[in-house]
Amino acid sequence: MQSKIESLKKDTLTALEKAKTEDEVRELEIKYLGRKGPFSDLMRGLKDLSDEEKRTVGKLANMVKKELELAVQQKYAALETAAMDEIVETEWLDVTVPGKKPQMGHRHLISKFIDDLEVIFGRMGFSVAEGPDIETEHFNFDQLNMPDDHPARDMQDTFWLKNLDKSVLRTQTSPVQIRYMEAHNPPLRIISMGKTFRKDSDATHSPMFHQCEGLMVGENISIANLKGVMTAFLQQVFEDDSIKTRFRTSYFPFVEPGLEVDCTCPICHGEGRLPDHSPCRLCKQCGWLEIGGAGMVHPKVLENVGYDPQKFTGFAFGMGLDRMVMIKYRVNHLRLLFENDLRFIEQF
Ligand SMILES: [Zn+2]
Image (cartoon, rainbow, N blue to C red; front, side):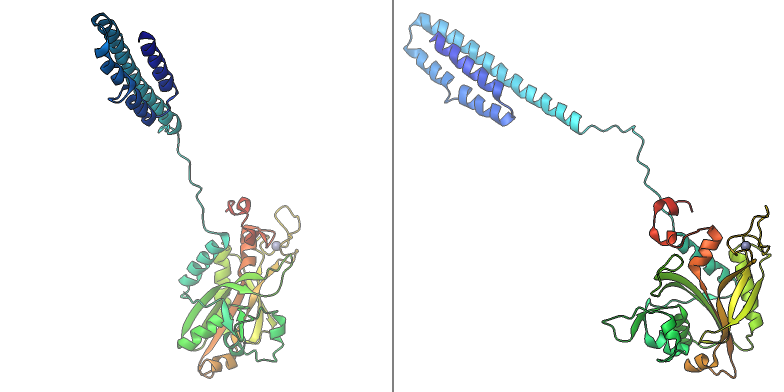
């Protein structure tokens, strides 16, 4: 009998040792120490024994049962401690560790520049007009005095849209002017800025680029007004009051006369040489920079939008926005503006 108790004790302790979860311990507790377990059987069998044996065996059985009950409780406690240890180990949180700083971004150089232009032109009474990137032939060419067979349509290698009849990615921001004039009566002063698209792609051309255009229409508007606005604008954008402008005659189908707008080089201030007498590379030592095109709005364009060209005149100008950004911020490659390389962007 004693040896049976001892072996039961051994079995129970071995099984307990192997148990890994509370549920397993509970099963063992029921299996060995429960009412239908071997210990209960053993106790019930005591009645067949002699008084002497009842005492010794009963005492031993009780002692072992208590021992095992204690072992079960200890196993529960050990499992709980192990679980806590694991939580401490895996869910450890040090609230004193310095936080990770989120990377702060900022607006792209071109977006900031567009904001600057809005402020400068805003001070001169120009409001901002916007239009779609996808334009119809009507707004992009026809209304700008460029009929079907006009050579200017070839000059601007255009992205025509396959599935949208007579539609293009706008080659200039001028269609915004047409849209605005068709919806408003003079006098008016607007600028339109944004993305434009042509099939150019080389060191100095990108198929997507940005333009800034302006339009002023009213009574008695002359080239003198154009010159005043251009000069004031360029002085403010390059933050240099000494900047002068000059016009050279040119041709654009939607203006008459057409003009190229130059300004004195903001790097060498028109000297062609830097203070240390080295040659200015930006203006190639000539002291002037070509900055955009302009002119007096062609009477035909005014007529197209329903204005009376006898009564109203106006000027329009257009400039490559990216080139101005490059000049102002001394960026030497156009593609740097569009690559979105953080090493470049973070410098501004
Ligand atoms: Zn220069």
